[in-house]
Length: 76
Image 1: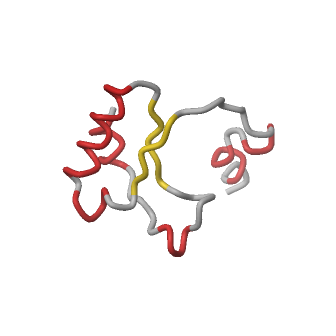
Image 2: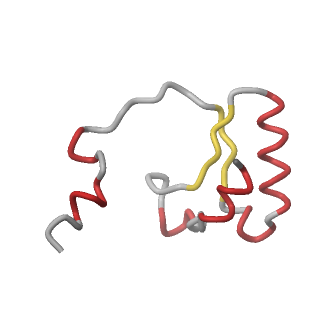
Image 3: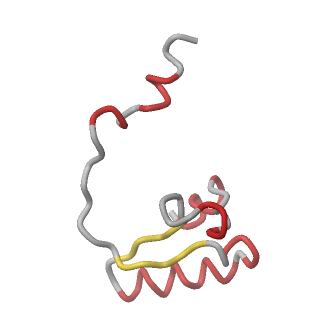
């Protein structure tokens, strides 16, 4: 999954993206943290913009955020 993350995601520099759009990998175990930190290091410049953070409770976004791209491009 880490290979997929770095394969399709271009992390944003937090100096202009802010924390709302930060790039992060959320982990639940020590083993996940080790793997994530190794992947971040292996990706050099790109990796330095990816935080490795402890996972917390997940809350589903409001309904108007669900399938946003499909809704936004429906009339095109």
